[in-house]
Length: 569
Image (spheres, rainbow, N blue to C red):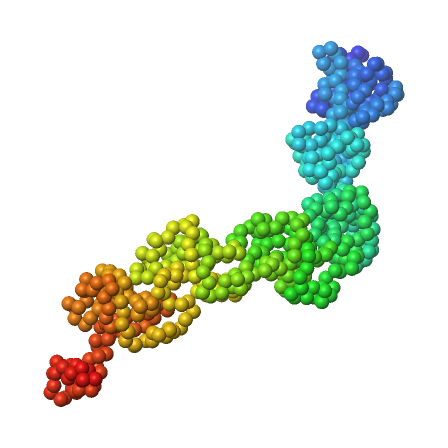
């Protein structure tokens, strides 16, 4: 049998393919082991058993921020990119080898939800890059720490644990979190510390952070919230008024929520409660001095002593200033006199009055100007029912439209006066409790009845017949006066007689005298007269004396007999 003494080129190629795993199973795309044969400048020469050696940069053998610990003879794993390039060199990569090995390891750790160790080595948009032993992961900025971190420098190039949140090998995407590790560690620490704490316990802690609503106090590994309302019994506008960051404070544990691991703290609970016995200390009606601490739309808060504040409602601030903002009456830090109106110890509320500590201008006006007094004031405003007049003592009185003038309608009387005009008025009534003053203008006219007199005062009585003198002739009636200097009154056109021919004012002249009957008194006690009522009354009297409905006598006969009798008398 013939045999080949020397292998041919084809035989050598077949043996090479077999040693490399076959034509389809070569070195390319695989991680293989090699030996460092030399170190030249920044490159390591590595022999993986091929006809040519490969060169790998030393930085690929170093961890971020460290130097490569490599020497001749070391055995290393590398990734074969190409067996031979255009220069006949083998293309090797230590980074690819580490990455492939790291991905295999990280996939196992991710499936077990285990922690992995990595190093933050770079900053990118929205976060940082982390080396996980060859594989590069993304660390979002929100996952760096439990609280926002301004300076990440101390965390760079430092091996530390991370939690893999997301992993996609096909896309080469890994997302990790350092915050998850810290939260888990803190939760374990907090659980252990909370077990040793009890509500009501007094403990010392360090102020870590201050916000608008309170401060966070470190109790030795666990934080508690000291709310601004629990810092002091007195008003605290901002926590920085009481404490500063870094201060060591003594606090009492108010509440512990073991489910959420939240702790509420208090400082004022260690002080004496100023509200104890406050009802006896500040009885209703007591006059006190206080300082305005805060002003709102509905009133002002007045501090009576440290920790004790009362509210002066806007309605209790001024006797005469209505519908104004409290800030236009008092100012912050102003010292004021107040009267205690109500005390509720359970709700920790004290109602105070500012105007009660001052004299009531309505009462003062009533004392200085009794009913019937004449005062002068300025017309402040005209409404559809009367005039408001400014009076001494910063109070206002009202002249009803029926009390402005005699003989004309109220609507017409309202146009007789204008805003800003100085007028003289008479005081008709003062209601101190309701803060009302009734005034009159027409009562100052000549012959007007005395203010405060009864309906039948003086010489006039209802249904009485009196002789009146015509003072003025008007289209709607006559202005008359009883006697020579009696009260003035008005006779309406319809009351001048029973017959229509008699109801003509032009039949009368100024100064003419005639008899009329007093039919009543108006709201201002001014008498009203009627000739018609007198005629009807006289006829009834004549019929009663000289005839009857069944006598057959006519009304003319009866009146004739009455007149004859009157002449004989």
